[in-house]
Structure formats: C-alpha cells, structure tokens
Length: 262
Image (tube, rainbow, N blue to C red):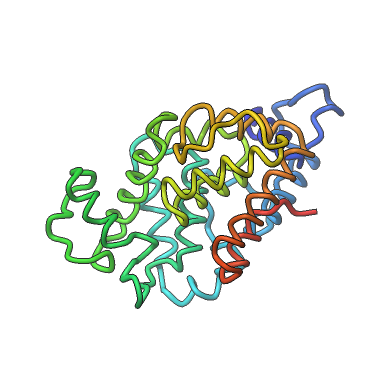
C-alpha cells in the first residue's frame, strides 16, 4: 500500500503532504486517488486495485478489443506468466497491445499486435521466444509468443538502461506507458530520439545528447522531469505533440491517450 500511495503521489493523484508521507492503510482518500488514476488512464473507474492487471480494455480501444472475443483477457494472462514481470510492465504492455488493435493484422505491413515481420525475424534469430521457427508471420503468433516478443523488444531497445525491467524504475505508470509506446510505435532509434528531443525542449534545449539510444542518461533525465507536476505535464504534452507531428496527425487518439488529464 505504501508503494501504491507513493506512485499515486508522484503522479499527482494523491496529496502526500496532508499526511506527511504515505500512511500504508486503505481509506477514502486512497480509493479516490485510485479512481482518478484509472480515469486518467482510460481504465474502468471502480477504485479497486487488481494485481493481476487491468480487466477491461482502455476506453478508446474498448470497441475494437471487445470485438476480438477473449483476446484482451488472454493477452493479460500471457503477460502475467512472464518471469518476474512487474505491475508497471503489465500495464504498459496492455496499453500497447490495445493501441495496436489487439490481434489485428495490418493489411499494409502484415504486422500484428504491432509486431512486424522484421521484428519477428529478429526475435527468431535471437532465440528470444520458444517456437518461433514454426511461425510464418506475426498473425500466426500465439498469445504467449506475442507477450514474449513484446518483452524481448523492450529488453533489446532498453538494453543500455537495464532492459524491460527499467520500465519499473519510472514510478509513474502513464509516463512509463508514454515512453514505452513511443519506443514501440516509432522504433528503437526513432522513438528514443523523440524522447530525447522532448526532454531537451522542456529543459530549454540543454544537457541531454540526442543519439537515438535509450540509455541510463535518458531514463534519468526523463524520470527527473516527472518528479515535479509542472515539468511532468509539460514533458508528456511535448512528447505527445512531437509524436502527433511525426505521424502527420493520423494517430492523434493514440498520442492523446498519454497526455496528462486535468
């Protein structure tokens, strides 16, 4: 409970100054903080903590995923089976899966769950997930394989910062989701470049080297800006704006999902 209160305090949903820090017990204020966080992140607003992960899709993708039977439930179950997976990872991977349309196969790129044929081939060569030698295209991936490939992608993309486990260092689920979704949607280098440029714009175009690599320096600079509500909101808004321009306004709903809510 103390960790939950601390995270909600860092995201601006729970005023810890009123009690001089987390109290470690559940009450009306803690329940309201959880509801506010759920509302901001497009989840069912019930004030309940669900360690197993979200039980309903984000509102903006609800219709798409509800049309795929048990796909959302099965994907969250698969994520939960990953070794040592954190609650932050579960949330982040679920949000990305939803943003990519669940198991939908893109008719142009042949990607499914955002996993492109090239990513599948790279994962196969790396021996990242069992059974990939028998998979011809992303649409043929099992749910467990989709979850495994997604995690492998972040292990690779964030290797300089500690792999997928580095997502848990960001004590702000929405901000962790924004960073991960940027890296996933815009590619390892392209996504890192956008993140670095957004950080520098909020910081006054100073300090951070823009090299397209997601290392410890970038992760620390990102986390530092999250520590204050005003710079946190500026960072998330700046990143959303830059991503929207990069996709020529064609995926605005996806970018807006990660903006701070009033």
